[in-house]
Amino acid sequence: KMLSDVGEYDRSSGVRPKREVNVGDPQKLVIEKEMSVTSILKELAAIQAQGPQKYCVLGTRHCSFLHQQIIELLAYALVLSGNHVYTSGASGTNAAAIRGAIRAERPDLLTVVLPQSLNKQTKESQELLKDVTDLVTMPQNDDMSLDVASRICNSYLLSQTDQLISFAFHESQTVIEASKEAQKLDMLVTTLYLD
Image (tube, one colour):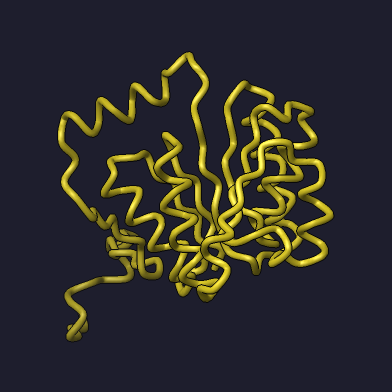
């Protein structure tokens, strides 16, 4: 019999030793805030809600074609099921949400809020916005940087809606700030990270 620093194991016994298997670094659950009974009930009620909701869809301008298709499909499904979609007018996420909502052929269930006046938008955005009947502009923000105007616009959008669905990269500061603001307003927030 040979002893080693691994332990006493006799290969001739035919019994295999039990080994602890370590399969990579498992994901850890991170709880950002304590879940109270009230917040859990609120989330369950929202899931079971029969009536239409007002959804704010915000996100990064820089997303892949596949992500845009997914966002467009989401907005389409939300509007088809009677929900009202609110978004801004930027390219990427917001443009995809607009295309999806328009495709559902319910213009009364789409509201687009621009951070500045219409003429400050790109030609591509202006073309897309021609089909939007409920368009809100903020020309009072034309002298501000787009970053500051966008934050004001996002706050307004959150004040008009029940839930936020956001698409961001971990460095998408404006979108992440909107998500944090929505959480402070006790809104239901779903943030999907694209990276």
